Image 1 (cartoon, rainbow, N blue to C red):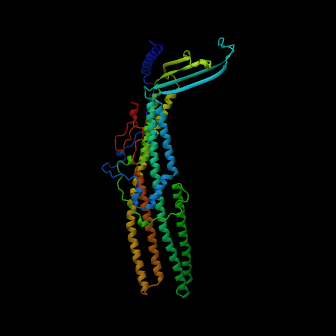
Image 2: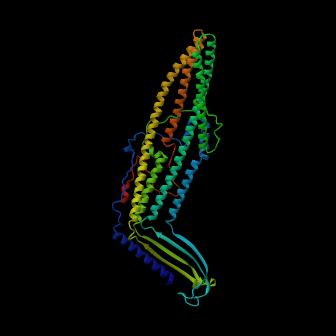
Length: 504
């Protein structure tokens, strides 16, 4: 039998012996000392949040902003999704997490390395090197391939890979959450600009009305029909109207700056002409909180994947208590004298197993396990906090949406009354039964109602966008390429994972 085959057989026999010894050592040690270390937190599910599982409205469309029927808004959101630095940052973090997954996957496979060393050396004449090398200057060389493979009997590398996959999934959900947030911020800023543009028109009309009032009062003072008191009161109303117009224009400038920042392109929204508020469609949304809300939100999905990654980190920390078993081999040439490097006599090779078993590590492994368990508790509580905040967010937006609808109904009634009074004042003025000052006074009430109508309509649009974002903003979980072994995301209305079961 060739020598190398006999050596390989002996290595395999030794490997079997090491595996058996490792298993015996593991059994004798009682699976190491992990007593008293267990997570304390538990995941919240739909029943504990009081969500109604009977309602399941359709999810929000991925490009929900198109439902408002405004091409200007569509263009702004599209541009922001293409150029925003905040979104590119989230995508870079996703790429980093995917790279970490590849690194963890590589640890589960055999590793092969090449080596080439060339050395010119003088050997000591007074050491352990015998003549004729002693005191001579020679060249030495080594050329070989080395291979190693950690036999993952206890799942250390597999759990590290699962943890990396969970982190990559969390980063992927974070990138989607950034996309949803960016789109909603652009839409809300644009609707704010639409509202301010409408308010600017009302403020301009108010200024014009105050100027007409001042002219009329002056004429009446000159005719002896009014006193200087009325004149001074009318003069004070003019700078007040200019102040309101300037304040609106300042808010418009700040809103445009906010849009520029969201788009990542300075001055891109400076010349933007917003659409009329009446031309924007309202989006009808469900008045109920869906039971599958937490499966629709990217931030909740990211928090859930972090729980999965932390749970795998805990399992990985447990595997550190068990032996490591490696299979190592090398083959190549080594010689003194470069001319002899490729001679058959310069061949060298070796193969054999190695076992490493922690015996005394001064509590390091238990401390590491406690730390990973604390991380898991923190991830679970972060998930629970995100869940509770998500439910509150949706509830707030639903309540605001319903309240705004009722306020708009009352405001329309008040505006109808003001418009009617204004119409009567105009008719009386035309008939010679009243003066024009009464007309302007009636128009003041109309303008006040128009400002209120613009504000309420703006709030309605803003609340619709906020509710869309709270309902997930069109997020749909996607499977990461090459992540077939990753744990599937568990919906909130399904049975939650037993975190304590990790320590059974």
